[in-house]
Length: 118
Image (cartoon, rainbow, N blue to C red; front, side, top):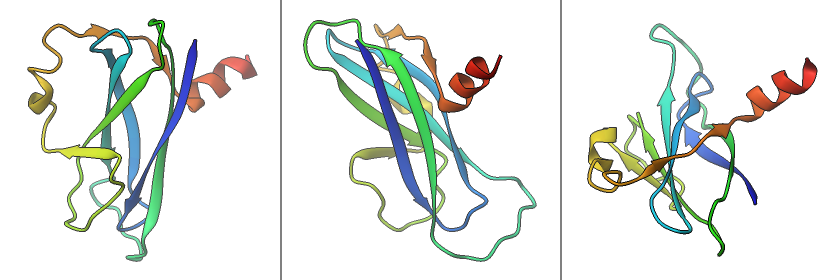
């Protein structure tokens, strides 16, 4: 069964972007998606709250309803954000949770759009 989700994060300005780095299956119906926030080093922009989004699609291999947990690396500001997202300092924090995880192939909307344009 295909799963399509979009993670949305409020950012301090529009120079920030978010990219899905990996998806793991950690249980019969449980998945962890790892995302990274970044911005160009010398980027300058007005400090206006903006939104970065990362669509992700993958195939659910289990029989029940899929449960997805999203983890994001790279947040540098101190105000609260989306409570459904877990902000972490480093992917190393997931080392134990991913010890027996299975890597899952995924696509992003950009990849899907590029493939359909061919």
